[in-house]
Image 1 (tube, rainbow, N blue to C red):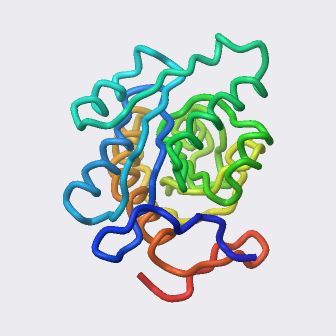
Image 2 (tube, rainbow, N blue to C red):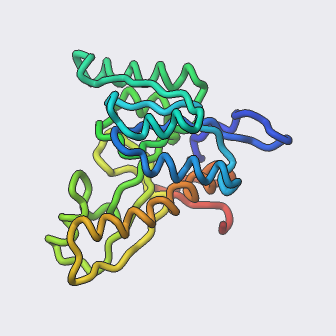
Image 3 (cartoon, rainbow, N blue to C red):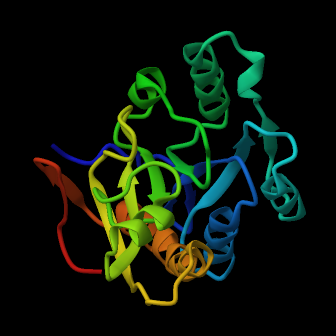
Length: 219
C-alpha cells in the first residue's frame, strides 16, 4: 500500500509545497516547532490553518502572530462526536489541506474524520508507542520503571495512539526524574522529530508493509 499524502500542494519554484492544517488544544509548542522549521527552510510546507477546540488555547495567539489563519470549533457546541468531526472535515477541506497534524489536540478523532483524510493525519505522542498510550504517558513510564522513554510520530486511526509509526526518538529515564522533568526532555525531542517526520513523508517515497512505514531511501 502506498502513502496517502496528496502531493498537489502549491508549486514554488517547481517544488511541491504541502498544505498543512494543524489541530491544537493548548499551548501549541509543536505547532511552533513546525512553523519555525518552515521559517528557517528546514521544512518545505505551508500551514494553511490552525484549528482549536478551545478558544483560550495559547497556540492560537502564536498562530496569529505568524499571520496564520485560525479557527475555533468547540466540541461542546455539537451534539455528537460525528457532528464535531464533520465540522472539522469541512474546515480542513475548505483550506485544501493535504496533511493534518495534531499538535496537542486533546480530542479523539472518529472514523469519519480518519476516512476523510486516509493516511494523511499525523500525531505526536510522548512515549515510545505502543508503550504507554493515552494521557499521562510520562507518569506511566515512571510508574512502570522503564529506563528509556521518548516520542513517537504516528499516523492517526480511530483507535487511540495505535496507528502505524513513522519515526521515534528516545531519551534516557533518570532515577531522579519527575513526570515534569521527563516531559521536558521528551518535548525537546518532539520539537525536532515532528518537522523531520513531516519532511520525510512529504519529500520521500514511502509505503506500508503491514504496519511498517518503509521509506524508499535514507534521509
